[in-house]
Length: 266
Picture 1: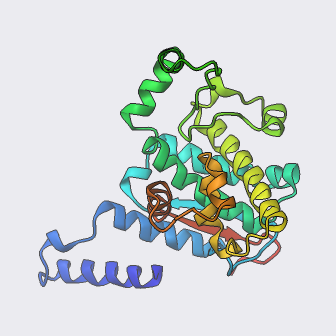
Picture 2: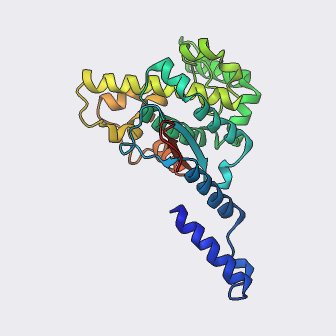
Picture 3: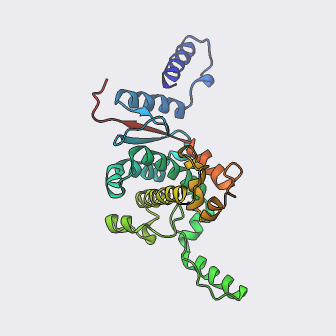
């Protein structure tokens, strides 16, 4: 695909130079940048990664934003952290490289769904006034006449309620510093890795044959947003669930590449 884009760029540039095409037909700056980036990835031994097709256990990973909306500084720091800490997170959780890549890809989709990549007004308001969010929960409970305790606020751009203990201990990440893109990325990965472990256990213990590896991306979000019972009771409908649909749409805004460092560059 990237090779076709290279040839298209060359042809457009040639036709513009000789007057066959107006400059308005030229590639956009984003398209030109992506052509260069695809070329660099290819020259440095990266191959495009796909779930259930690439099964390298310990390859390096790189996530390439392909939409202007995800080529911001905060998103760049988020995806770079996913790549930079892959080996450490694999060691911490003993997770396979292919599963890590899938969860890293999903984490970007969740970032889009939960905070529109750090930009949604709802997210910025919640982070600016977490006390107000907690107070609203207390008032709601009081008005309902309930005796239950107000739940903790979900924090950070991926709206994590509880930072996994392994991540908290290893990286010093807590709910108050999840606004930092790198911390949010690592915490989200830890949460998703633990959620995948829980999903696998449920499949075995509760005989959930419909949850196959091909369907992890459809059912894992239910654990993430607190609807595990829907999986257990086989009432989950990922094909029509707005959260799942949004997450998968945002995942298409990022391409995932991996590189086996044991292979020589070509």
